Each structure stands twice: as structure tokens, then as C-alpha cells.
Image (cartoon, rainbow, N blue to C red; front, side, top):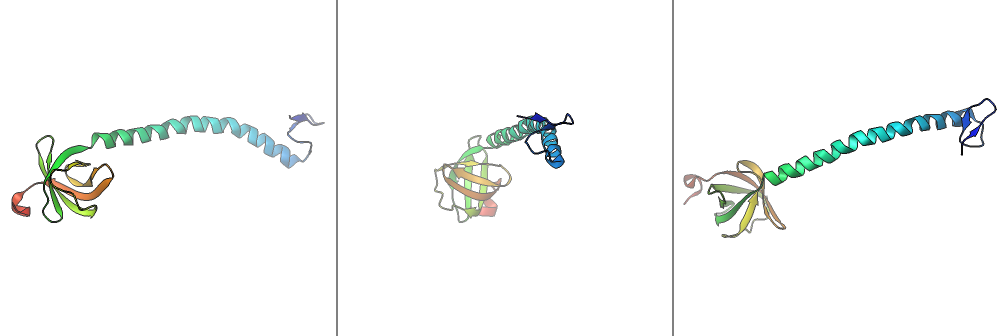
Length: 132
């Protein structure tokens, strides 16, 4: 409980040290600013995570592996496109007929399903570059 000193100023402790009184006064003035800062920053942080999650969910392309020549996977997407996913790192034992999700249809991305993930470079399938 604050007490009032002889000169009319408030003190948070029995000590009449001027430094302690100044620190208590400074802390009391920062307290509302701390809540204001938190109320402004917290919604922005939450929104940024929400938008990242929404973006990640937007960019999921389902397909089925139809061929797996060495270090490549030919994937027929659910929309009919045929893509080549070239293995870069990670799991490399995908089999024909397995369902996969690609995070991109062109460029560097991830091919995954459940607990299995592979870093891949994805581009349009061209049989002359990979072989029939």
C-alpha cells in the first residue's frame, strides 16, 4: 500500500530514499504503456501466424506418383498436370501409386505425406529430359 511522505509524495515502501520513490513512480507510469503496447502488438503477431497458416494451406497440391526413375518422381496431380519432382534431400523411398502433397508446382518445395518429407525441385514433366 503506498504511503504519503511528509512532503506529500507517494512512497511504495517505508524507505524514504528518493531513488526508490523515483523508480516506483517511473514503474507506475510504464505499466499502462506496457498494456497498450501488448494490446497493439499481440493482435499483429497473431494475425501474421494466421496468414502464414492460411497461405501454407492454400499452397498444397495433391497428386500420385506415377513413375520413379532415379532421383526423380513423376507426379500426376489431381487437376491432371504431370510434374517432375527432382529429389534434393530427405526421404527417397517413395513408391509408384503413393499419394503425395507438393507445396509448389514450380520451383523448390517439399513433397510430403503424413510423417514423410522430401525436399524437391518441381517443374513440368518433359519425357525427353528424363526418359520415357
